[in-house]
Each structure stands twice: as structure tokens, then as C-alpha cells.
Length: 388
Image (cartoon, rainbow, N blue to C red; front, top):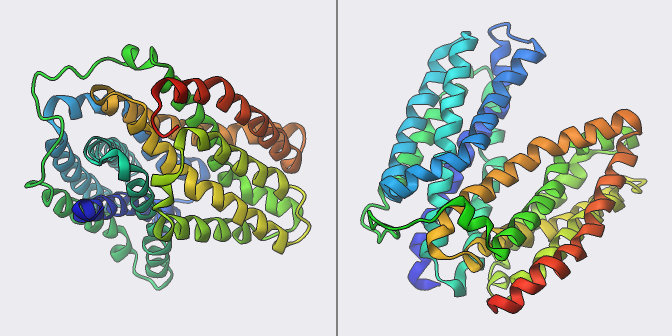
């Protein structure tokens, strides 16, 4: 770990920067209000355009990583993010311009994220891959307790211009960070390297197991988006669950990260799905905020270990030449789950209520978890014998 300490810190800082760019714009709605733009439909398009572009470009941007190399694509993505975030700041009340620059930022951010994760999957040795992803994924959460509160403070204290230029500031920070990778050894530099195809990836039982596991795990993660509706229906405070989840999740990734190197990741993956789905099921029976918080702690246990565990598995079970494509698809499937989960709960809630909807979805995932282990992960672990 000591040999790779500086490199892992760079991964942490780069993930912090790119997630800060995304999270700063959580407060776009109150910013646009200063221009008298309050239509919910318009706000929805402005907020969602970034995520749509980021999600659906992920299987495509990996081609750039394979063709031009990791360093070039990281620097290029950071430069485009700097330009596009400045474009958002300069667009003022022009919704077409804001949408254009938001879409461009989404594509560039997707390229940045795929590049940096591919670099980590290819460069970090097997024996410390789990702990490295645990530490680095903490950088993905850190903006929620830094960039978001700062953004909110600036807007509430009458500094909208300072707020909107936070985007270009963190983009510049990410550019400076990735430029520091220049002298590091970059994996996958061979111009004629055969990176394989998506069909090659899907032929592997290990990749299919990873993708199914990622989908079900991410669906539990995405339930957080609809938790406020459940809390409101039950007269509870959503932050009691969310804050407890975030606190334990960050604690695990910062202080118990070495567990990810010792745990048998293929055997444990489905267990993490069981824990998060069980926490969601139990929270529907919570009668007070203390019980809601306990469920959040249980959820944070599964999320703290499960998220970096699934990212590390992309390096455990995938051949080197297929790792860029599989990494991009892992992020794509995670994002897709965040798109579909609110729709699933929304349609179920229209028929039943939030409580019943959460029970149906979480119970379905909980039942699926052991099946994923028995029919997908167990055969792969027996065949590969890595971290089994």
C-alpha cells in the first residue's frame, strides 16, 4: 500500500473534484430563480440533461480511452469540463445555452470518470485493489459535506455569482490534478493493443455475474432518491436515515478500508445486496426517527463495503484488455439504476403507497440476492479462484 499511497491519494482527489463539479449543480434551481426561471419542467430538463448525457455516453466514451490513452482523455475531459462549466456560468438566463453546456459537461464528466476508474482498475495490484477503491470512493461522498453546503451558503448569503463559478473552479482543480499524473506509469499505452469488444465481455460468465450484481445493488442505492417520499408518508425525518447511512459508509471507507483486501469479494457481493435491501425493507416498519436511523446504519454497512467491493470486482474477474469497456459499463449500469428506480417506485406508489412500494421492491431484491450468489457468483468463484 505504501508504494501506491501517492497514486491512491491522486485518485481520491480527482474523484473528489469531479463529484464536486456534479454536486455543485444540485443548487441550480435556487440559482435560476434569480432569473425568474421557476418552471418545474424547465428546471427538470436543466438538472436532468447532465445525468442523461453522462449516463448514455458511458459505453461510447471508453472508445476514446482505448484510442488515445488514459492520460490524454483525462486531460481532455478536464479541459472540456472547464470550458463547459464556464459556459454555464456565462449563459445567464438563456436556457438553450445552459442545456447545451450542461449536456457537454455530462459527456466530459463521463469521460473523466471512466478514464480515472479504468486507470485505477488497471494500475492497482490485486492485493490492495479493494482498499484502494474503499478510500477513493470516500472522495465521491466528500463533496456532499463540503461543496454542497458551501454552495448553499453562498446562495443563501446573496453570492450567486460566486456560487455559479464554483463549477469552473473545481474543473480547474481537476485539470491540475490530472496533469500531475503525467510522470506516472500509464497502463494500456500500446497503440495496437487489442482491447476486445463488448460481445467478448458479455460472453464471460464473470462479467455477466458482475453486471447482474451491480444492477441489483445499485437499485438499493438508488432507493435513496425516493426515501423522502416514504419519510413524509410516515411522518419521519429522511435525514435521520440518510445521514446515518453516509456517516457509517464514510467511516468504513476511511478507517476500515483494509477489510476490502481481506474479504472474499465474490462471496460477499450478494451479502451486501441482502444487507441494503433488508435495511430498506425494515425502514418501512420504522415508527420513529431512532428506528429510521438504525435502518440507515444497517444500510450504510452494506453500502460502505458493497460499493467499493463491486468496483474492485471489475478488476478481479475481468481480463486486462476488457477492463476499460467493463468499467464504463459498470458506471453505466449504476447510473441506469438511478434512472429506473425512481420510476419503479413512482409507478408502484401510484397504485399502492410509498410504504408498500418500498416493501415490494426491497423484498424482491432481497430474494434475488441469494440466487445471484448461488447461480452467478459461486460458479465464477469456483472457476476463477480469485478472492473466492
